[in-house]
Image (cartoon, rainbow over all chains, first blue to last red; front, side, top):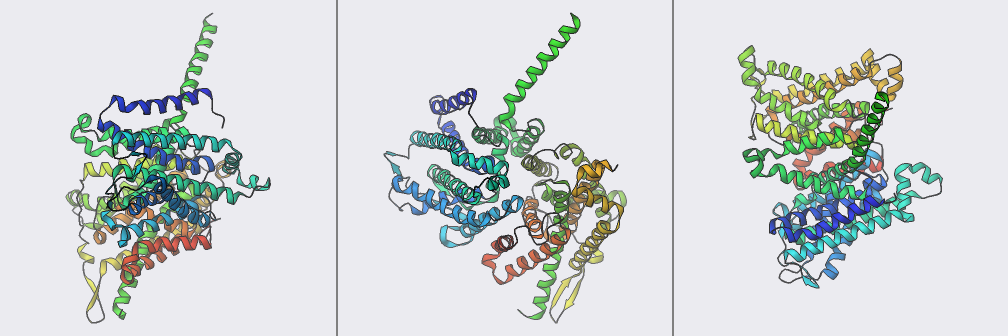
Length: 331
Length: 293
């Protein structure tokens, strides 16, 4: 779990690059990367569960969606809400639902856990989708973006705010995973039985991780709603839960930076294959390219994209060894 | 609800449940025996339905036959597809983590959907039921029930019975059951486990494709139909208990009843009922109704 210097450098450069990005690009680039950073934050919340605790949650979009819907529903119709209370309220509501879902679903394990979390997410989905409570299938618009020291309706300011939230979450999780609590989660992931035998009551740890993860997903949802100004039930759908799960597996489980890499890789690949200037009319079939890329990555990278440098080093080392042995033979 | 309506809804639930069972049985087999979480299983159902539509014209040209020749040709293609897929995409995944398999099969879903879109297009299609089964039974004074739906239930029951016999009464079934318990042990007894897995996978694919083909005349053929079925089938597999065919049958019938009657009696909440039921069952029995082995 210790963070080597090269990893620290990688994360530092990545955040610096994200901070510098708006100076090199136009409004499209700012909008795109801002959106991807929200996804990255969402992926980080799931990584805490899947990668760090070994709990595969297939209903993460529900917490994201609750955060997003709360942002819109709690905002006054014609006035800017203050983020001082709006943000904690959204995070709190998402965490509260996560607490309830976690308390029940943590009774099950493995694939059964995956499906129970899906079931609770679907329940939230149908509440938003089929009741007049939240605008039904049409979704609802956020009329006035909330304010927070500065007005968040300027794209650049919002970009900076999202960047800050992502950085803060990353640092928070990195510190958390090195704490006693984080060690306990790692122990639960490796061997829960042993942790129990060692005297840990694992259930409260898992529940705390689940609630925290739900709250962070709610934060991502809140940022998404502020950014897009529009929410619809698809934010809670299982497709979205699946997509974020795919992001972190693609990036590499068990590493926080894997969630960042995965979110960016997934979203950029999607953007690449959708680009009509590169693929012309075939861009309509962007899923084919994305699917094939995913299959190739599974085949070649058993540890996800974060395993890439290690694999490369191994190859170089292998080639060196081979050269040395041929040199010995020829001499 | 009067008696004929009630009867019709019962028959509908039975037919829907049995159809789901066909797809779910392949999923639970592949999952229980090979330990692979196959998200692409719904795509096989979709492929089956599109085969029923797209193969009709060429098959009529080659063999001059109708719906039943399409079924046979489709089944042969499905077995081939399953066999090749296992060889190319799954054989190297057994040693990997489950989530790597999830990622791989997710990629396959995207590829299958786009290939379908490239080859057949994105339109919604209808498929004619065979003329032989086009009629309907009279139920009560005014109601009728299509013969084709009864035929679906009948065929599904036949397949379920066949599967049961293969599993409990044949040497192949014995090897499959043994392979699910201990892969290495079976291998060291001289059984070609790789071939066995390939057969199981091909059979699972073939059953799902078959389900899609027979369902095509009653459910129409549309993009994304695989994803709809996939989630319901996962629900069935976990309610029934992973790897349990008997559990899958019971769970599928239960889902059929809950979904069909839910749509009639509580249309506002029909979508969520299935999930509420799954949550309740799993909170009551965290390992599903019938845990295998």
